[in-house]
Image 1 (cartoon, rainbow, N blue to C red):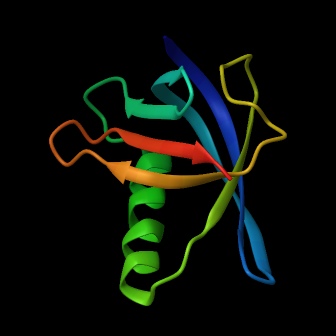
Image 2 (image 1 turned 180 degrees about the vertical axis):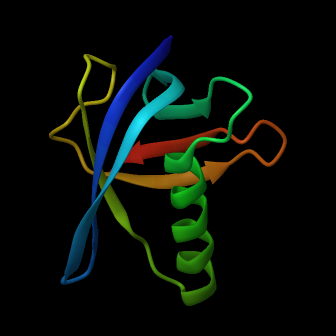
Length: 100
């Protein structure tokens, strides 16, 4: 389904942790075993761009960053669950995350 929501991303990498805030993200969000995020519109999602950059860095350094998402609107995202990136579809820009 399509959602326009503010999203706070809390990330952790070993003992390091932090958070980022993204305003008015226009996304398609689905959850059926995995969490699927895709930009919904002509503008690139800042959230998805940031997750792709973090994931590329993780792959180069052989590590796994974990994510927790808190949305301002009701969405299929479980705010108490930690997720990790499983894959990124280069053609559609969609990001598939699994529960950690």
